Length: 604
Image (tube, rainbow, N blue to C red; front, top):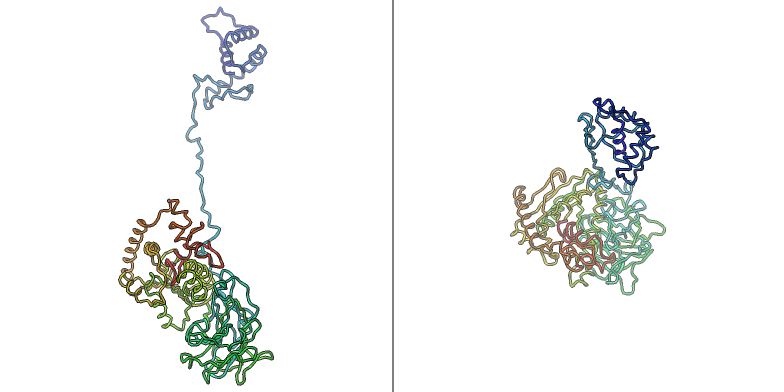
């Protein structure tokens, strides 16, 4: 088309005035001349020129010349690309490629394209620190003077129902392995008082019964407020269990006579406490189970509270006389006893409570400090939270594991205890109590995670115990053999050093207490520990880039000490004896940085 247009313009262009004798060709002559030139010159395959086409095109010549003047004056358009379709009359004519020039738009006419902006959307699942604190759980409302299970003086995982008269343990997530215990709201220090317990239908659950551990257990007796919450666990309580054993002064012996059946469902056990003779007796369905037991001297002259412990055996508390309730001769039920004493009362709000987090290496003296703090402030009734707290509640499972591990407990059970402890943290943060987190808590992630459970107004305090290497070694050697725990692997010991830190004030805690040192000395010690630990890890830790170390089912740092989600690792191999199986978060969830045995492997 461009070639055709140029040829037509050249033909219709008038001759110069210097040659007046030439005659302008007529329209038929123009068509014939164009046709002859078309025959002589080669054309493109898709270009077909005929006389009719030339005649039709000449009708547009006048318009094209008029529009060409406008195009040459403005020169603000580019030459259109050649197409096979006929040119419309409204299109702008093209100019010669050799003479046409492209003209850019003036700068002021260009519109700047705005750059796209991106907005960071908030996370769909806010972290626990950003979530509002959970509502406070105050337990069942009790009438003034009513004797019931104490919501404040019981385990946080004890399920109290029916207005405080029914108790049961949890069975989900492995709580069926733990002793779940509680005391009543009132106790007695004088007189002859009795109370009763009726056993209900047993709970069916998985257990370590294949290793000789009975999954249905029950204990009932009395204890002092300063004693262990599990009846019969120490010298400050007296109790019997459903198998016929008695627990006095921390020792267990057979109590039922030979041939006497063990306690079972629907049995009613009556406990008669004689504070005048300092004895205690037990009855089942109105019949005596044995001779009266003498109270230890440590329980003389102090208020004793009915205490009950259960493992998968729910019960109903009996506190008043009735037609179906047996009453020993000369005794009064505790609800009707006028001189009964009220136990500790829970704080009204969580703003009145305190949370103390211990920080330190193994054998640094954290547990010693905790015991001293509890003795010095008995009015606060501290609840101690830690992996050791969970493991003490499952002694049968610990002993069963040691039988299969040549005397070692195994890391799988530690990881299982850590999983339970996380649920305990969540339950504890909903109640107005004072807590002590007795674990290593050396790493920042563990500190933030555990403190985030207590956001309902608690006063949060950190206690750092970081002695020198020499003092730490001396304290470790001074621990009795029975209280020593399994040693940490070297890589985890150095990992604790590499990431050792102190919580910030006041963002995380309101105060940091330094034991046997000051803030400046501890800061210098932390720098030294960090450098030492990081240097050791760089030189000795296996690299994850090595496929044999990273994916090996039995070897490799990731699988061994972080649990690994493949087939190997401590978590999976040690949990083969667990009723909950392996692959529950890996050993890194409990052993590496979430706490562990003896206050938390890896510091939490």
